[in-house]
Image 1 (tube, one colour):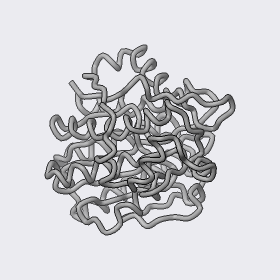
Image 2 (image 1 turned 90 degrees about the vertical axis):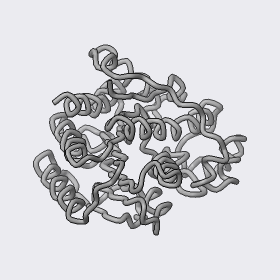
Image 3 (image 1 turned 30 degrees about the horizontal axis):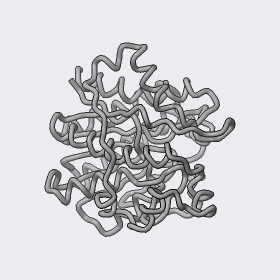
Image 4 (image 1 turned 60 degrees about the vertical axis):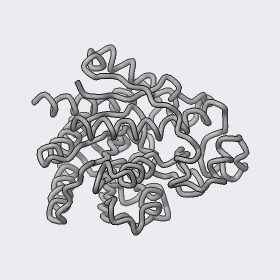
Length: 302
């Protein structure tokens, strides 16, 4: 069975009207259970990451402010989330959730995390609802341990993975590729190893053509990574609150299957994370996030 990593403490209590759909994590698991998808996965729960482990990629002083609840008003404004005990606890859980997912993928070829994709977190500050960068943390841990020789972070969230790009600049063991909307957050872009900007309003056909070209370009660059960390953000959907692209449910499913199948056919392990997804109907957002789990099963069984 494919591995799925989740934790009941992933939800965050936020005030009504906040843009971040903070209970989408438990809703996602409920939808997977309702539809008979969850039973087809072997479920795992992460342990919290130790401060020393996170300090391999993040500033120790920043880690301490998160752990001790001493983030400044300015830091919380940039982060976009109010500090709470729950936020602190899940901030240490989720990075190890992605790491556990990646380990399962390396062992079995494919695994999914019901959270993750916090690509706006930087070395010494959080931003855009991202506290710690689970993608950088996971990739660095695995290459430093020798568990993977090369890791590809393929970020298909609608927003550029700016924190990921800056934190990994110059690390030739980890290749960063971001497909994102040309006119969206963040205003100040970083430089990934490969950035692909997609025009506002692009729908299924145009997006999938760009994705196919990007996968071909990665192959031409002789990128055959041991592990792909795939950020399957659903904020590319046409009804996303913060998106600006126009993919349908069909487009999301086709994107996810294309990515997973491409790399599995070439022998790379694939670990998926859910990335961003925003809307006033949390059940609908959670359903969009469920698509990558369905796609993973389709590839694994087809």
